[in-house]
Image (cartoon, rainbow, N blue to C red; front, side, top):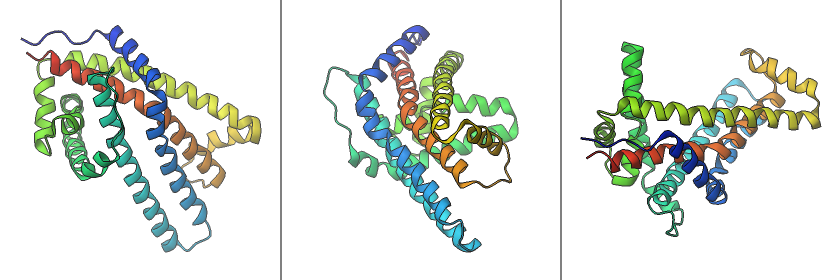
Length: 254
C-alpha cells in the first residue's frame, strides 16, 4: 500500500529552501524567459507600420522563436532541478544538450497531456480536472525515466493513482504560494515602473489590459516584459514544488 506523501509544511519549506539555495543557478537558465518576451515585444513594435500580411508573418515568426526558447529553457531547467533534488549535496551542472535532445519528445508529451485534459474538460469539467492531476507528472517521467509519448502519461498515472486527493491538495497549496508571490511581485514591478513613467500611465495600462480592442506599444511592452521577469523569477519555484511531489510519489508508491 502506498505510504503518505511529503507533508504539506515540509513541501513548502523545503521547496523554498531549495529555491533560495539554487536561486542564482536557476535564474541563469530562467532569464531566457525574458529574452523570449523581448522577442515577441520587439516584433510587435517593429510591425506597427507594416502591411497586415507583414505584421502577421513577423509576429508569427517571433512567436515561433519565443516558443523554441521557452521549450528549450523548460527542458534544461526542469532537468537541472530534477537532478538537484535527487542529491542536493552532489554538484550538478545544467545540460544544454538535454534541452536539444529532448526538445521534440517534450513537445509531444506536453501536446498529448494537453489534448487529454482538454478532452476531459470538453466532456465535463470534473474529468478534465481529474486528468490534469493524474497526468500532471508526465513531463517529469519523460525527463527522469526517459519514458516517451503515451508511456510518459501512463507513468504519471501509475504513481498518482490512489493518491489523487493528496496530490491535488499539495498542488493547490503550492499553487497558492507561487500565485501570491507572482501577484505581489507584479504589483511591485508596476509601482517601480510607475515611478519612472508616471502612475497615470500605469493606471492607463491597467485599463488597456482589460480592453482587447486597444493597441498600445508601451502597454504591450510593459505587460510583456513584466510577464517575462515574473516567469523568470518564479517558474523555478513552481517546478521545484512539482519535482518534490513527484519524487515523494515515486519513493512512497510501494
